[in-house]
Length: 259
Image 1 (cartoon, one colour):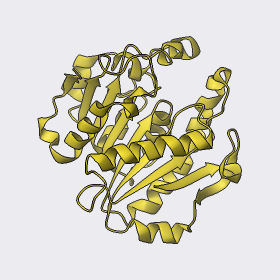
Image 2: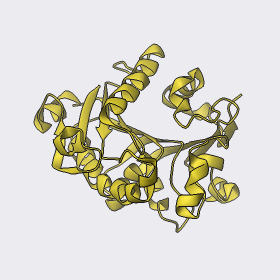
Image 3: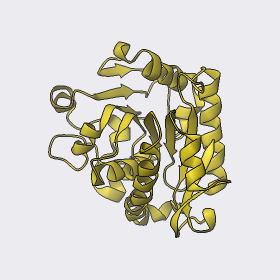
Image 4: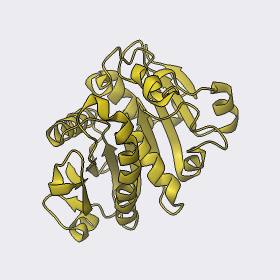
């Protein structure tokens, strides 16, 4: 896993660096490393210190490798993106504009990789969804193959036509929304934002998504992922589903429930 950070001194929880920093290599070396490959970018959520970022990304990489998804025919490289996401629970309102600011650094990373990779997938967790969605909304020349929004801490109508991030759907082949109504952290989203999180109960208007957003796929995970906001990466269902995304996407229904 290659770690790219926009945090000051690589590990700050609150301050940005002047530009992205690639661990152990230059931008040019990173571009050469991913050349011609299908690359996965991981984006963490709110309140994640750098040591937890690294641990979470390595756990995901291990889960993918166990399914055979780190290979020349699937993901050739995994790139973990770290942004200053605060550390205290009360900091969520401040973390939202930080996520918007981090989206510019994510966009810079996408621009660097787009010129050399074969394809790019993006997987986000929690408020990391805002980082990716805002970055993809800002410019039209960067695109993703699969966009996997896990427990997304964004408004539940944001993918609807004429809403905040609907235009992103034109920049990805498929968008997957994984949600759980049992998520104990996203229950607090309503208090902070006076809205409901997409990662809690899924889209506000499922019929609109079904009829107007044909490349959005919604997965209800509440029977498998309980209260643990980070529980997705800890269950086998997650990596089974990811294998389906990469190897048999035509078998995935528009709306499904993990059993």
